[in-house]
Image 1 (cartoon, rainbow, N blue to C red):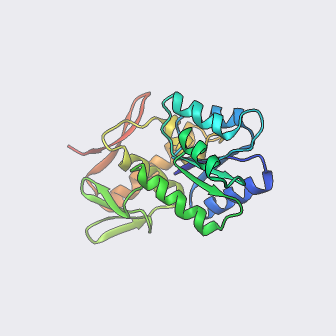
Image 2: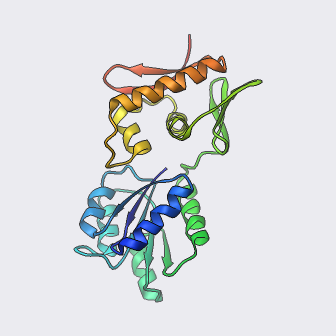
Amino acid sequence: MQILIVEDEKRLAEALKQILVEQKYMADVVYDGNDGLDYGMSGIYDLIILDIMIPYRDGFEVARELRRNKIETPILMLTAKDTVSDKVTGLNQGADDYMTKPFAPEELLARVKALTRRRGEVMLDETGYGDFNFNASTSMLSKGAKSVHLNFKEAEIMKLLIANRDIIISKEDIITKVWGYDSDAGSNNVEAYISFLRRKLNFIQSSTEIKAIKKVGYRLEQKS
């Protein structure tokens, strides 16, 4: 799951990122409203944590522009302002929730989970496709009595494939979602991890395959 942090206090921004990374989220950080809008407009994020008092464009304007451009990514506004009028303004500009500084990491994580769950993109612990099961909490891939553990990036790619079942996922989308917006990862990285996943599907003797669609991407299919 990919989260964008828009916060000009660099130490706080890095602390937020660390909290999220420790919980296995992917997080990108930008420090002003212009970059926040540019990154947010990409539509790749599952959540945007947006401070109000940031340079160039404040958080209200960023939220308003994102919503005007039909970007529906949940927005959690994070700010030192705690008056009712500020909260109402933020919500009216398109924010989904509002949290004031200082905050406890537990509160942040609870709000992150609630907002992403509300969007309907959080995967159930136990899910799957075809004849295999995948446990997102333990990263175990299984069919019947046979099971195998997926490493972090393998698990993230599998989540993406399952969540978008029967839809072709491009290599670019996989790189952005799994490695991050500014990553140097390329097609070779994706191909390597797809190969690892195919071996593990074969190991559990699944009849599901990761089908490569030439020059387009990948999708899950049942073997004929």
